[in-house]
Length: 491
Image (cartoon, rainbow, N blue to C red):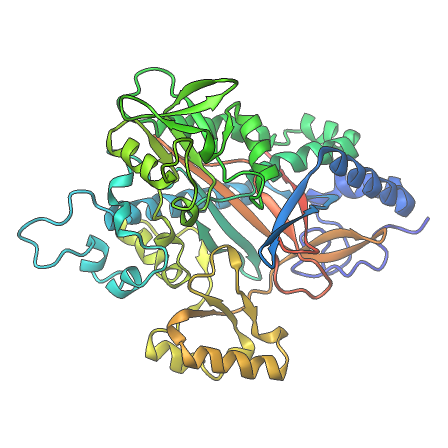
């Protein structure tokens, strides 16, 4: 019988198969099951996974020409395996970045302002020369009016996302998301689909200590409860706030709300309470809400109307200032996500925490700086370009994948407005086996980690692996053609 790994090009950067063609130890149980299935059996499993996910309606949305188009989110049935040492390193790095970035947000949005005797009113990190003032003031995500939208002592980023890649020299932090990170629901859904597809493999792995991503749910709920306003003396009532079925991640939001055991509410269900708080219309009655887990883009807060016709941002701001409501995550966090500030995070870690960064970062140039621009203006064909307002990877361009005409257009655009761009070295990230047309082939992958910050900052044991859409694709993301994998954490 021909091995399902026959012809699989193992390399030094493949996580499952080494350069000598031998399956790495962590993947051997998975490989044994795949070999037993054979090519035909693997194809059958792929079909079963596809049908199971279609039955459950596992979809993701994209806006095309202003309209939401939903499409299935494929799952490759071959799991990605991370050993305990890798996970401990990643968890420590994610928690460290979240603690530092929350400290940065607290510094930038200091409620009391500066001391009267201070010669300037900048954040401490600016006064120390760690972060240039212009990077904060010019950031598209900086919202000065957000100063009063956090309660006393509240972590401004209750839930944080972190994109990481495994490069030739180890793990790299490549992007932060402290606005309204998505994907945790899909990580939970992937385990359900993967377990249904290969029950025997999962049963054996679970007996050996495979971590269940569902253990992330009580950690998330506890962090949301920790964010409750001080006036809440009993069990806080939490609701997940969504823009509604028109949201690209509507399915994932519903799945996550169900897992948390909290209602999924839209702005039209929210009412002001007599004491300045907020209630939600649920099952024919208005129920008090203490914590809104915001999954709605903050740019849309003013566009949505509540049940009384009041703009959502007005209702929320009044309730927060009255001490009756908290919002997680707090609006204004985009200043910490800014690609131009990414380069400063290692120094933020040293400044706020007095620690050395656990995770390495990618060499990055902020093109608003004349010296940085001079270094890379003739290297755009080698670099990855990202607009400073390109949250979630929007607008990312890989120079090595551009044609000559596209490069000329890119260079003209960059030189016309360099302040709009950040450039970074591309990362030759790792590959894992993926099933394509019944055959195992290597595909690049990234990893999305989630952390929560309440009384403690914790990495959630439910990371999301995303798979590049095609052979040779350098960029991994959630766009058309991409897929996901169940991520195994071995204890």
